[in-house]
Length: 378
View 1 (cartoon, rainbow, N blue to C red):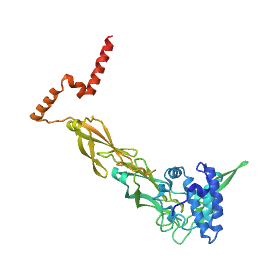
View 2: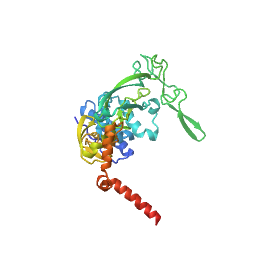
View 3: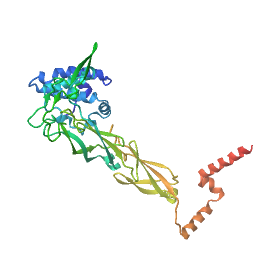
View 4: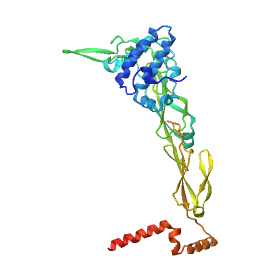
């Protein structure tokens, strides 16, 4: 089923600023939140769409990717599968007000739970894989939520206790003269909780360092410096917070035959001077096999021939680029006596009277040189 446009989901224009996005999200999230619509599956699904749209559009990098590629920018993500499988009243309402007003009022929830960092993985692929698309498996080091304590940091069967110093707020107020200063609690360091019996696996951190293997879908037409985003596959958050994203940075290896420019491919094809003079037919390579190319007589070195539809298919509009073959007339080497004799005979046939007919480019060049020196003598 096709997804709705994220801008339409939030009811905002594509030129909407961050403040407009937050305002629209707060209004819709409060209306459709599952805690306000118990048992209403339609409202629950609507809330999923709203939150998914908000998380993309409020992030500048994700929004840029969405504006350029649409939903295809997130094909490798698992947003639709895992992110909204369960709802907890305190967590989800905290998300709404934390995202929208946290930067204004300094919500102390952010001091207790922190989203994981985004990760970047550099992947080098060959040109054939970039043009046709492929699948790759990568192994990356990462922090993941502890499976023993489920991110709480507390030993199995126990829970973090509310900090007795700040009473769970994570912050304390100090009076200095006429002013009251707010600062992080020195006992719990802003977490609001204290773990008496830490988890034996993660030692109270709520996450562990590990490796994971991911399958990456490389779309056809990708190029160097393009990035693929995998939602929630970055570093795990602390204290059960959301994981960051993983960005796969693509680099395409230099190809021994082809060079790529946008969606076109270029290659140089050497031909001998007899074929250049008399014409003929040669085979040239493409990424899909060989094709025949007709060389007309009197072809000059550097002539560019275009073979349509043998380039790269665009990721944006799916249009196919072309293959451009530049012929290079090769000077023969290691000649035997008979070949040298034939060339001498050919050379002698190019008498002065034939130069203009047989070598018009040389004639124009040397005429230009003569005029240049004549002008200097004036």
